[in-house]
Image 1 (cartoon, helix red, strand yellow):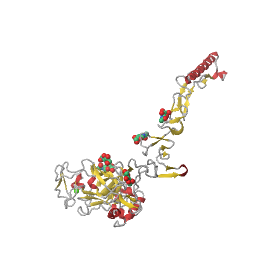
Image 2 (cartoon, helix red, strand yellow):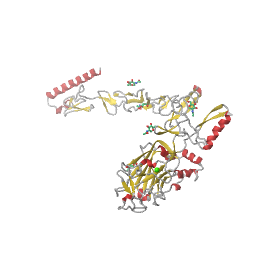
Image 3 (cartoon, protein in one colour):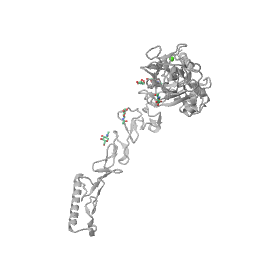
Image 4 (cartoon, helix red, strand yellow):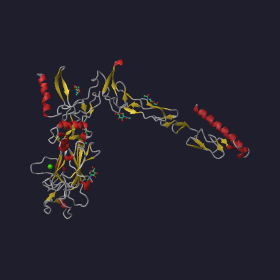
Length: 527
Ligand SMILES: *[C@@H]1O[C@H](CO)[C@@H](O)[C@H](O)[C@H]1NC(C)=O
Ligand SMILES: *[C@@H]1O[C@H](CO)[C@@H](O)[C@H](O)[C@H]1NC(C)=O
Ligand SMILES: *[C@@H]1O[C@H](CO)[C@@H](O)[C@H](O)[C@H]1NC(C)=O
Ligand SMILES: *[C@@H]1O[C@H](CO)[C@@H](O)[C@H](O)[C@H]1NC(C)=O
Ligand SMILES: *[C@@H]1O[C@H](CO)[C@@H](O)[C@H](O)[C@H]1NC(C)=O
Ligand SMILES: [Ca+2]
């Protein structure tokens, strides 16, 4: 009975859709146990969870109230936008409400009264969560679609932005790009960013209202026109570099660059008919949970995966504490049909007791030592359990052993230190005269020149004699007539012809005496 129930639990949800259960209770020869699968949340209407921002400030119409007309009725300018009157206001939130049949509610911009200055507006949608698109993005414009616009996306909560698609009635003129259609892309170019002219032509403001980012057409390149062959798509998503990321976003931005012109040139005498009006932005997608969750909930204003497989994080992007015997991996759609859960494993569960603190995926048994040891420790670790730092690295004492950054590079100065190893607090071993944690400084009475050398001269004990000056502790610059390390020697000792009797001889003698005294003092100092 239990077996039958388990079988039913196993079969039923799978029949309803792919990758929608994370685990099931199954009976095997060894008795009942959990079996785990790659899983993902259902696709949702993402506009219900979005935060919107419209730029620049003052681009929304109605403050002060203003009149506008339409391309169809250019001289019947009876419509009015008034932010202070709920019936006549067009705030951004009306792009995300549900439309009642036949009555569109919309955000509307000011009119192009500042022509020829361009009428520019940005609509930025943010989820504070990575989303995988599963269907087309559909933007509905009332009163005509923009002549030029651009779609951008961010994968890092708005820190960096990338072009997603360009739209223009003339791609060459607007963006210097040839016009292409997504339908014409091939398997190798499925993630190409292109410019399309399909959604920018004037066709009457009532007739063609939507601008699309075609996700289904791109999926169809792999899954066929009716998306029947999803297995092929999932296989490609795993194997083609960058393909999964192409459909992943945290933010989207519509850059509206030129409004609908009604199929003709801008008519300066009637600028009230140029503006943007967006009644709906449909974004269909699922939370990205790295195939470790089948539920995504809206908590405290943010979407959050309900992580399984002992993973955690907003995207199930890491292993739970005490489940880090292997490093974290995303689940995989492969092998079909259930995929691989790539679950995080409890410390000590694999190979008896071989904990690798998440720095290795593999253990190996060493026969002659009779031990199990981690293989290929990553993150600059080493040791049976990857519990030590590699030579040239030291342990960050305030980081956990399973932290990816637990080992810090010693960074010993190559010239100043004896070798590239350091002690537990990051101190390197210095050559004579060098000092500092990294041995990149010199002790007092030493100077740095490709290493530390004892001072030749200074202002205290190793004074240059006879008016010589000390150059960077490295040598004395002697006046004419003197030489020697401390300018203590008169040249006439070497060449009597230069000399001028007894006075210079006396000077030379005193110099020698002083030099000797200096050396003597230095000897004391060393004691
Ligand atoms: C729209 O956003 C882009 C960056 O993506 C920025 O360069 C531009 O100035 C913005 N335009 C307006 C009107 O805020
Ligand atoms: C974004 O989501 C994270 C994780 O759920 C949360 O800690 C953070 O406060 C959210 N930020 C904003 C601006 O909502
Ligand atoms: C996660 O850990 C629990 C114990 O807390 C265990 O029962 C369960 O089987 C683990 N799941 C996976 C996928 O390893
Ligand atoms: C050591 O680890 C702590 C905690 O992870 C971190 O805040 C700190 O920056 C790390 N120190 C260094 C030098 O990397
Ligand atoms: C590392 O070396 C420095 C300098 O020699 C010393 O002050 C420190 O106590 C040493 N740390 C340890 C843990 O030995
Ligand atoms: Ca609406």
